[in-house]
Structure formats: C-alpha cells, structure tokens
Image (cartoon, helix red, strand yellow):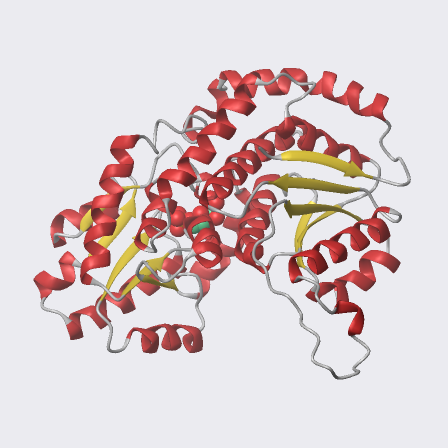
Length: 419
Ligand code: PA5
C-alpha cells in the first residue's frame, strides 16, 4: 500500500502541529467519507462500484476486444480530464500487445493535427470522441477532421462502426450517435473530467491499449476501502492534504511532483491538471508543477536548490526497481570505473537519496511510496490523489469540482471565431 513520509530538515511542521491540524481536519474527512449532498452531482467517482463495476468492465472489454481485432490504431479524441488519465497509464505501461493509441482533440495546431492524420495513413483505425459537454473546441474540431478522414477511407456503414462517442446521456453527442449509428458509451454525468479515470472515459482507451483494467480498478478499490475506513490520525490522503496546506500557510506556494521514473511523465500531467483545475480559484491554491529526474536535476534542480523558496516537493517513489541493467567494465580508463558492476536500479536509487538529502535541507519534502509501477498501483494512485485533492480543496475553502476560470478564455475565443 501507498505510504507517506516527510523529510524536512528545517522542521517547518512539528509533530504536534501536524496532529493538531489532522484533528481540526477530521470533520472534513468524515464528511467526505459519508458523501456530501452539496457535491452529489460531482461525486459519482467516490464509490468505484458505480462506474467501474464488473458489468461496466465487461462492456468496456467487449468494445476493446473488437477494436483490437479490427484496428491498428485507436484515436482518443479528448482534452484535459477527457484524456489525461488514460494517457498517463497507456504511455507508462503499454507493452505493444494492444492497439496503438493516437491522441487528437487536445490541440488546435495545424502542424500537430496534420502529423496526427499522417500517422494514421495506411492503418485501420477507430475513433473515440470523449466529451462531457460537447462544446469544447479542441475535441469538437478534431472529431470533424477525423470524420472527414474516415469518410475518405471507409464506407458510411464501416465509418459508423468505427466511431465511438463517450458523452453524457441526453447530450447532443448521444443524439448524433443515434442518428449516425455510432457506438455510444456514457460519460458519467456525476463525474468531472479530471475525476473520470475509473469510468468508460479512462478505461476504454486503456483497455484498447491492452492495459489490465481489472487490476487498475482493483488498486482503486483497495485504496477506496483504505481511505474510507481509516480515521483522521492515520488516513494517508488526509495527511497529504493537511501537510500540503500547512506548507502553503508557511509560504510554500508551489508543489513540485518529482520522480526518478520517466514512466510517470504523463501521470504527472494528469496530477498537475487535477490539482490546478480543482484548487486554483477564488485567488487561492497551491501551484502544481512536475519534474522528471534525473534529467531535470540539470534544469529546475538548480532553482529548487538555490532559487526563491517558493516550493515544497513531493516525490513519487517506487520501492521495487523498475528493471535491471548492469554497467560492465570495458577495460578502458574513462573515470567512470566507480560504476563497474553497478545496476542502474541502485544508481537511480542513490540519485534519489542524494537529491532528497540536498532538497530537504532547503524545503519540505514528502515521499509517496508505492510498491511497483503497474496497473494495480496506478489504480491506487488515481484514487488516492482524487480523494486527497477533494480533501485538500475543502481545507483550502474552495469547491474542488468546478472550473469557472476556464470559461473566461473560452468566451473570448468563441467571440473571435464567430460562434
Ligand atoms: O476536468 C475537467 O473538467 C476538464 O479538464 C475537462 O475534462 C476538459 O475541459 C474537457 O471537457 P469536455 O469533456 O467537456 O470537452
């Protein structure tokens, strides 16, 4: 199971201060565990049995089996919460046994879109337009150009068979599916995009890519049980939420999610979106950013160690090495003899320990440890962070489920485009 440890050489939060804050936040946890009436329309993800039950998994797997049988590629059309969770797992774990996943609906760049279309040339593919409110420009416009591309390649019947839409019941997307004979799968009405990992939104693309979605959901359910049955004193999500708010109150306005595993690259993006869109409102919020080590020790590492003291750091730490690769002596004197016979697993671990020693002298560091980097543990992480983000938003005093700020730019953009 996931565990949290703190390394903070300045002792910014004493054990006593943490215990007091956990006690104060206990009612927040109790309300979250009970489910809150005021968030009824946004909490369909709290109980995974609702949208990730065995029945749903069977339906998702049946669609995915058909995709794997008939397609070389599967195009995920979606932006923000509509594609980040799936992408974070697929990019980390996909081993080539499933269908290739191609992403669209997340850019307006003609260069990127043309490249996406080129990457489909000569391939059989299906598309999945994932849109909760079918008004967002990026997925809507990509869906158009992909429908056009499919019309050139397939008969209308075949194109329809290869088109899936993940939309809300009663939406214009559902109506389009009825009219055109596309496959409709539900985007839960009571789950926002960034909380949708455990639903058709995240699970269908993952299943098409060959990810073990049952293991992922199992990990999520184990975490759900733990977080719902553990009290304030030992609840890891509450501890994380309370600690980040305590550091924030002490002037640390940014959180860096760091890891020594590039496999977390897209997961970090999901995490950034979850916290940025959930907490950054009413003039409040901790700014979330991510760093990929050891590469970025040669970039942001300098700022973290020597720059303005704005941030605390949260490390994702995988206890079991993600592989083994030994450096053998080659008889040449190149000043790297000290590495002879060493495994990269140990070298990477040494780099982590060294970074922790250096950074924790400057800023508070949290370590979130997980056993292995696999679908089961991704499931744990998704549920853990979703629940912690909810608690943290409550402690901060904002609504973690809306995103009013996103609407401002959309208004100007629609005006510019004559909508
Ligand atoms: O988390 C969210 O609510 C957002 O990031 C949405 O997922 C994103 O804006 C896409 O929305 P939609 O699926 O309605 O196009």
